[in-house]
Length: 374
Image (cartoon, rainbow, N blue to C red):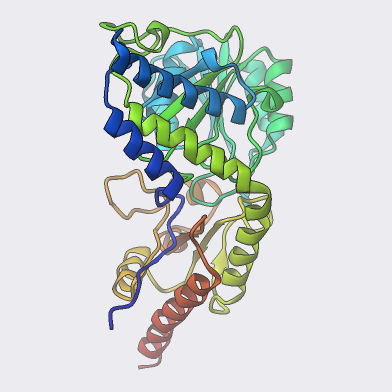
């Protein structure tokens, strides 16, 4: 009998929630272009605007300040282009979409280091903000996609405000898992995504604080109030809105349930396993760890053969397994970083998934022990 596959890679993308899938099917059946003036277009427009309201309400923003994009990477690029900053400050553990922009941009860029737990060094950050050419843009993830480590955004925002810097917060991993409010974060720009929380892929948003600088970088259409031209993906946006609505509705109960699953998983790992970021605040669903002596690629493939889907870290590198820049910034030795694995749970995860994943992982680790003894 074929085993039911176990999915433990929600940080890469969560299964679409049933409620979102139903809403998307209805939207697809209705059809219509949101920019058309006839009844089909007006219905499509109403669906898009209803999704915009849902998303705005979830992050304490104004609906008119929600700009729909194709995802978080698209939204990050839009924010970086809009800020008009003379200098860009990023943490050493930012998403590649921001980090690579920092290394390629023509204006001044500075990288704030992190400690062994993946937390930004606030003293160095304050110094970078003080010395940076103005206006400066500070880009920080709310929660890291690999380790799940949550940054102290209240302190970071206070430093940005003190030095007159704009603040870009990438909340793609945090949305639906921890409270996310553009007002509470004191962010100029907030980036969010659909497929991490049970919505479809290919949908995201850049949320603007009132008065945030914005520069249109594309032309040829009036969609999104002229800020991002192109026909809206109505069905995907409907799914995004419904998925976020359900994620927020369940978040208070889900967080401790997922944290208990993560802790149960880590407690059952082989005794020599090393968990990264465990001494810092983390997302409740995420565990980033290594089994010394095994490469990530080997374990990911072996786990897949056992019917369990896990990852080696970020899923934004065209399927490549590579040593983690995030762990390197945390001071993890290269050989250990190459062994890094990530397990992440979500709304469909069950306790039996934890047990099945541990069973498979410990079986693989046992093979390692046998090879070492041979």
